[in-house]
Amino acid sequence: DIQMTQSPSSLSASVGDRVSITCRASQGINSYLVWFQQKPGQAPKSLIFSASSLQNGVPSRFSGSRSGTEFTLTISSLQPEDFATYYCQQYNFYPLTFGQGTRLEIK
Amino acid sequence: QVQLVESGGGVVQPGGSLRLSCAASGFTFSSYGMHWVRQAAGKGLEWVTFIYYDESKEYYTDSVKGRFTISRDNSKNTLYLQMNSLRTEDTAVYYCARDSIPRGSGWYGDHWGQGTLVTVSS
Image (cartoon, rainbow over all chains, first blue to last red; front, top):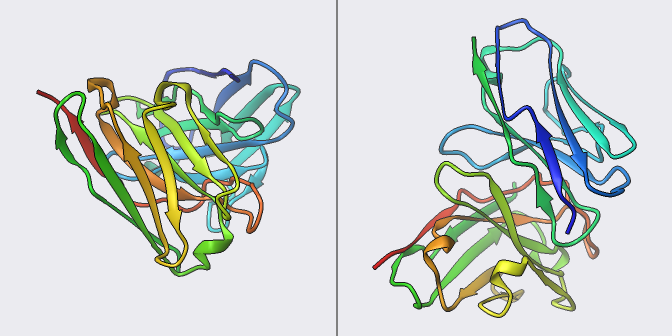
């Protein structure tokens, strides 16, 4: 199975900060990666697919990039509604696998 | 718009069985593969299983193989998850989710239900 190693596991930041979350795949997954945002009591929301394509309706402050087997989600200027938990997930191979999650908290 | 509504969750004893349903609307259900994903309280997301639009293929995570069965009834626009030999570690919110590419396999994670809670406890 593909292991997705996500870091950091938690992150404290302030409104207006630029933050990045990284996900590393244990083997090549091409660009078959999704980034999700999840708030308590809600289903996950897809932000980025194919590593760098923005889902419809997602603000442009969110972006995704890939370098080999390392993937990065960047939020350019944190807004109050961005404080949530973020997950990466590969969909190149079954079983689909998620990263462990990154909890983004207000500093 | 796409709507997915799970039902069938509840409390069951270890070793018991439960069948979850996911009623789909707002799209041509028979054209899309479907997934189940679960999340234990305070834990991360875990993909469970997937079925092709035409039932030609199924995939499972190792921990549920031989115990869980995914199925669908395209005439009723409904997805199912039959869960047998349940364990305490199966306790979670179970979400159904729609694949993103019609008549194929492609996942962008853009359509989810609200989830149904399964509790396995004596």
